Image 1 (tube, protein in one colour):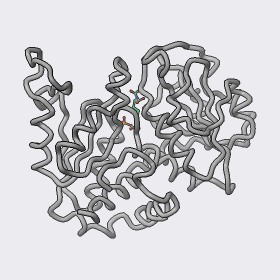
Image 2 (cartoon, protein in one colour):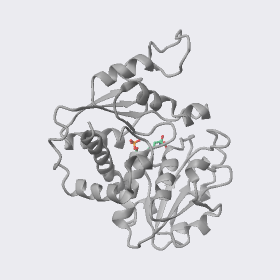
Image 3 (cartoon, protein in one colour):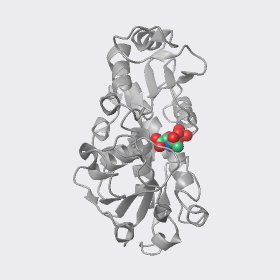
Image 4 (cartoon, helix red, strand yellow):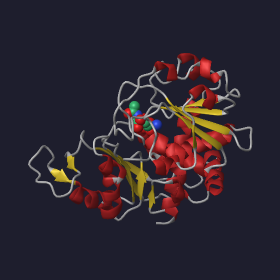
Amino acid sequence: MKSFLHVQDIGPLEAALAEAADVKRNPFAWKSLGKNKTIILIFFNSSLRTRLSSQKAALNLGMDPIVLNVNGDSWKLETEMGVVMDGDKPEHLREAIPVIGSYCDIIGVRSFAGLKDRDFDYNETIINQFIEYSGKPVISLESGTVHPCQAFADLITIREHSTKKRPKVVMTWAPHPRALPHAVPNSFAEWMNAADVDFVITHPRGYELAPEFVGEAEVEYDQMKAFEGADFIYAKNWSSYTSYGQILSDDRSWTVSSRQMAVTDNAFFMHCLPVRRNMIVTDEVIDSPRSLVIPEAANRVVSAQVVMKRMLEEL
Ligand code: AN0
Ligand code: CP
């Protein structure tokens, strides 16, 4: 695996899920695989889970993780090509990336969508430069359009809790005070479309995701109708794709509460975290025994470890 952005990068899902179960059962079985190998994790944005679970996964594999917070500890990096660098950024990615590549064996990059220039974000301009100029395998830790480590952990969690062969999984938009990227819902849609589930997306009009991620998924604008008979509810806010980066609605009736959960088939509740309580989901739902948010976050170590393990095996 030269890079990990999309569901196809992991190959057949059943094999990946079986490997995830192995890794979870015996996390230290591959401790010698990463001996004398280094992973550098670059963060252009904040993180709790990704930062910690990626390091934990690397340590489980015997690798040495190094974390760099761009904008915090390092020089601010220019990401646009062909600009006169007379602003506040003293170094360009074009030099920084090969330097970083020379210090490590695998690179992880978190660089959120800026939500200003759709082409810049949707061309994955930043992570693609890492892929092109580092000479090393690159993992998206949420980049311009995708968050594959999250979606893989979500799929592992669904598989662990599903009692049906083909569960109904509903991804619902929910209100949020700030404009958020599409990476989490894009990847969740991409992975659910590839998995053996009935997948429905529900959101107010104007929040349609990019067609390449929606794929064949059913889109239902009536949230209550979408929730009927669901086995898993996956809540997330995102900003508009068509009116790029805009907030079009703050309709609090979309906040996931026991009113909507009542029409599901006793569904589990999921969210990638961080979550704003009583905006995205009520206390009652997130604190209920059907909430999977903590085991879901715990599975971030497992998904990251499978990806890093496969990259190490190919080094
Ligand atoms: C980010 C997002 O929505 O993309 C990260 C989620 C993993 N969330 C926030 O910025 C709150
Ligand atoms: N879910 C997730 O990626 O969380 P962090 O932003 O805290 O890493």
